[in-house]
Image 1 (spheres, rainbow, N blue to C red):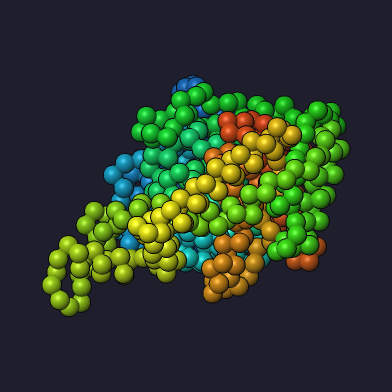
Image 2: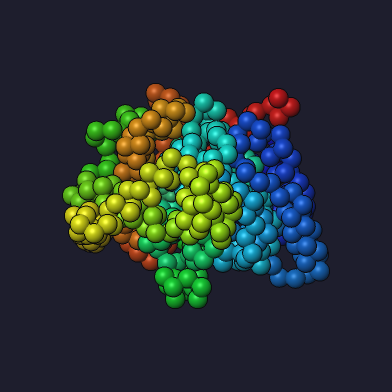
Length: 507
Ligand code: GLN
């Protein structure tokens, strides 16, 4: 493997700034790696070699002309396929959007283009971001770079696998119930969901608007922080966007990089008892989680135990609120405005029959299941019993967090109860799949930030284990400080040990 590929995004940024490498060289190295290994990983739905190289050439020219550039200028990035890039295919891994070319850029893409990051392409995902394994993609199966027989997590399995397999140093994901953090957890990468409202959702194809948030995927905490800083900020095109300055996240991570200096002295870290082990949690996951708690203590932190009783109901509430919003958001795919249009095989061709035939052919089973569930929970007669009660649980989750944050600066748990499972293990039983998100969903319901960082591999299967850190809303900086210190305390980031680094590329 080209040695540039093993470097972090910020290391590459420094090399670019020092003139030790050009963005064209770097982009070519990523594209070559994609060509050589994506045949087995299948992380990308679309590779934009020409577009990426064009940006790289422009950035190199601007740098040569002495222009002051963004810190990440010239560092390539991959984009989850539910974030629109003008003129490039965006399918959300759904047949219904096949052939659609967005006429505009998402706000995060505008920022990425202005900063000069070459966009390598669009990554695979569960259809419309619904799933935890990327097995619900209508196009292809993405494999985990640690073990090709296992899932890369979901819904953002493509972004996590692209970064984990050294095809891209950075990627963007979206997290509605864990789709950035859980794929990071099972692929040994770092993934963060920012505070709701701090990164614009304009141009993110909506799944559940009150839960969706775009965030960074990387191999180090500092890289994730730098990317979150780049994409953050107020946006008048997103009515839920917070009008607040972006905190200096990368600087916060740099400030804790000396593990010997006990950078977490005085910090209280709360273990959420309801999601820190017990039924459904794999032994090797809990063992690595406990080991990371010891590491945090060595860094000066105090570990406290907190209880959030409503966590037990969070998953249930999510699977009522999320489908309700899904059923409304996905009504726009009607065969007339975007993507494919299918006429009924027989009978009259009316707006209604075309809509029905298009949705029947264009949506996969999981998407249909959620639309039906969502329309049911919103229907007159069931609304109060399901949707109304779920909203009450959502309030309880928020209150539980508020009480827990009075006792601890950040809260922690394993990111997912298990390591990456094998293909097909959970596709026949949606409940089993849903349960993989027990620990990530509460943060979306409360709008608070969360990050997953790799802390080791499970003894029983050798697969990576993710450690989740949650902070109060708008305290993303506190989350990054603890994540950065823990990473420094554990030594070399786990992502660099991914077996994909040693693949024979000629195979
Ligand atoms: N896996 C969860 C779900 O299926 C979360 C999805 C997401 O965050 N987009 O809904």
